[in-house]
Image (cartoon, rainbow, N blue to C red; front, side, top):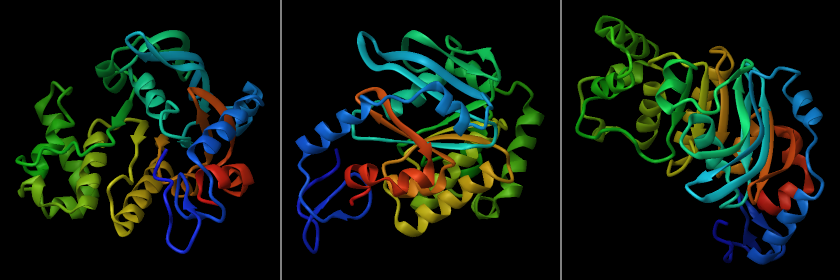
Length: 290
């Protein structure tokens, strides 16, 4: 969980933005979150939220790291061009879902499919090259001493045709003048928002149709958070990209996403439209600060 100490003006802070009117201890949040699992989420609900489109589907996923099992039978479904945001307490397994889709975990059960094709055991490099799935890290992953253009070229490392790689980089720079203006400057001079823009843009060089985005707002000032979510909205809307996101700013993530999932202790506890979860009293109490 995030900090649950005193918040300005009384109450305590919750999982997302805002504050709670009455103190909710970590133990209470853990207990109440766990009670959500008992209801379960039927596959028919997930199919309905995805509009009957199983562009990306996960069924019964059991996964973790080595012998440590983190996910215990997670289901997920998202249609082409939709956005899905995963929220939940720390340790719920949200990032592990992304890691599993991208091929970075030990999967011991279940299946991951894209457009009906089983990609469960596909290596991470093949997920990008052959399945069109890109993963955007939550941590600062730019190379500070490389130029902006060199960072973008790293996004084309799987392309054997150098001319095609350079053309792809040029296409990204044409699309984002803010980066083009700094193409010859080292990435270390970029602002936090510009670095996140560079990270997202680097993932676009190979033109994936699925973006796995881990904590896009982490460490950013509010003005840059809006910039990043505007960019993601363009990619999902006009760009037709499918986005599966983990976001610690639960209110911002759910406001952005078509679909919201609540994960608790490695299991899917709730699923609904993003704006419906925003209005849910239980979600508000536990994850949105009241």
